[in-house]
Amino acid sequence: MMTLPLEDAKLFFDLMWKLQYYVNQKHGLHTKVTSLEEYANLPTNLKLKARDELWKSTDLIEAYLQEDPDALPIEALDIVRKWKGFIKDSFFIFRHLKKGSIFVRKDDQVYAVHGIQDPLDEVIPPYALPRMVEAVLLPFKGRIIYDGLLSGYNVHFGCGIRSNLDHAYTVAKRKGRIITTLEAGAPIQAMPKPRDTALPQMEASSSGMAKIKGGSPLQNAALALARASLEASIADAEGALSSDEIGALARKIHKASTRLLNLLEIMGED
Image (cartoon, rainbow, N blue to C red; front, side, top):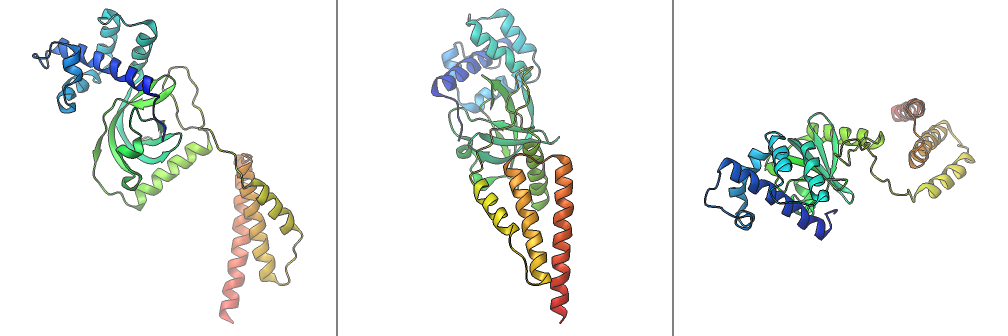
């Protein structure tokens, strides 16, 4: 699973604790905490007040940038500035992939999110998916991460929810709409698609199947369905499926499968 490089993970937490410590001091949340080191060493449950206050709006981030109490270098200030584009919402974590974990928002927006230090498939294991979480998504050096805290709901989701999530993910994947960055002005990019190693075998099968002639109506119907299915598989592997081609293939497969089913039903009545 994808996580940040160690030096980037350290940089993230260094900046996050500085920002939260600033919020803590501004709002007097933990008055006995008088240094950044003390704040960084607080347990997570005691950091929640500053964390929740921070994500109510972008005002505190802007104030921190204006005051720059930690005299951050320009590169670090730019990272914090981009956090003004955070997304705080409920998400379904649908699937863990090598290129990121798939977060699906209620509006069917799909995000590829990276872990920080710990892989997300260790934070929430695959057998527990899908899992609904409250999360804050952040831009970080061209990637999407979260702010270090996921609050989940231990709820079992039925087939309907799973089907809807699968549909949202499949559509986003097909149309190149999986969001991989939150940085302003950056285009939505498709996640890299691995080379389809089955394509040569499918092409060889298609070529061989074109030469086969059935000896009965049932065989011809089965072969027609197999050819149409292979045609769809090859087009998908080549990335050549346009909307018109999808419609044409759907009609061809539907026609072939209907013919085959009708023949099988007739034979079953004999």
